Image (tube, rainbow, N blue to C red; front, top):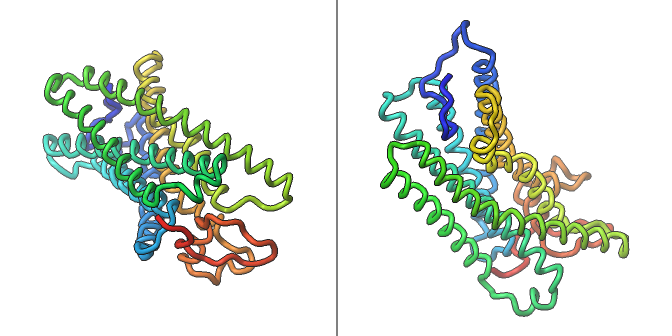
Length: 321
């Protein structure tokens, strides 16, 4: 097994009875990650398909969720492609290396976009909690659309700059490219991660306080946001910090590689978990197997209080964009 600085195993690996334990673990985790990626792509494709039918009147959080589902789908597609290239000689070596590097760059582009979109979701929800009058009366009508567009452009710009500096000035010096990735990764995590944690903590405190004072269940949208952020912090964050561990912490090669495999699987699980969260939170216990997926998803993303003892309308069009 070849352990490289940019966390890329050798291409064209095959299973052999003489493989070492680390390689066997790699193939096992890669298989689990591949299955997770396929299931996650199906789930996110369903979310994209359902939300696309409400393009005329879509709530701000439906816009964010639609864009997040696209980012997660792209991330999982690239992860599955990388795993396929690593575990089988699908292409020639030179072509595989180029395709693999392209998939790796697109994967981190999707990772950056997903992280920023999830931060925007928690931030806008936090603003609606702290400043409800402003949010209802003075929030720009197309704020969510503009924010999503800016975040996609920012993620594309940062990843383009990282690729440009790497290829233009230091190719084929992988160690210099590795340091460039560390710099941009530090900027991404250093900006978005604290904002996500802070806003999510504020949301949790406000939801907890309102639940105790009003003795009412929290809105499903709060649960969706907090659950998505929690899953990201526990499962997808290791992929974002693995560069720091590889660069600063002197770990044995086998341990480093096993950490890479684990972070890949956990990040794949994180990107696959959001559709499951939406449908679990949005489902009614008494009608769990009778409602359409669109009705369940619309209820989970509803940005209004839920009447006590009554079923809420299943809509994703309760608020203008």
